[in-house]
Image (tube, rainbow, N blue to C red; front, side):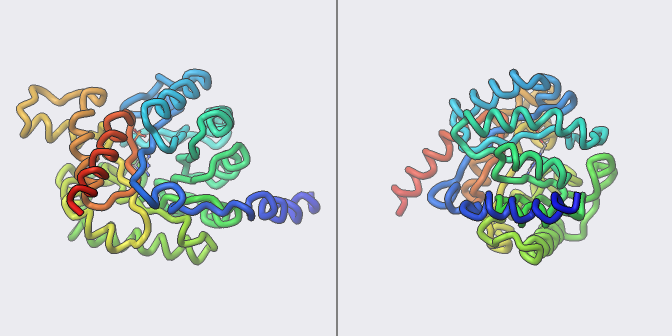
Length: 303
Ligand code: PMM
């Protein structure tokens, strides 16, 4: 026991010291598309479709074929009101999928978790990024675990937790307050030893925000990008606010189901990229990858 406790940090350092993650190696020259692999029974868009490891791995590989530059594997739904998942079950869902995708996909694999134990096990299985929707506030050991492993880290803003976050979320100034929290969490991450170059930030579209909050955050995304001084990840894909806007102002009859929001997703992805986002997290990467390529050509033409 004593030996294991004293050996583990040194073994980790030795294993990962040679390859400290830098976001610039992923999205330094152009923005990138992160494909979503939800190994959950209850995610809002694809819950239950990829709960089986074989199906999840096949889906991840198909996302890469369609243009995903990164894969984000999650085992706990963050849908508003979703039930919490215990660590044993979350590990059981994600670890085989992370291991197989890390070996076969040919792109970096990220683990979407708020639990340090799941993050550590996923890193052992080959994940090189931790995507933490709680930005280290869900588990005191998270930032130290990421620092020790030298992997990349996404700190996302969420008001409250998934159980309660959509119960009348309220802000005086959503752009300033989300920015304040992100700056504070990035400082905490650096204080815990995570390299500045390994950090990315995310305003957390849909996490404790009304439709108006989400639209305001996107409208002022360029200000957040300038403020946080690390790559910004944006996740609008198929989210409820898009269904709501499409129903209210785009002449769509009824609120489109999540799978029928990819056109709205693409519009928001192009907006986010134009505002300076470097990573877009999507369910359907083909159109996002094409948008990244087209925007690069247009920027060059405009230069
Ligand atoms: N959204 C979801 C889950 N994880 N992570 C980050 N960094 N940003 C997001 O916007 C985000 C996330 C919920 O969407 P899903 O159920 O389709 O994965």
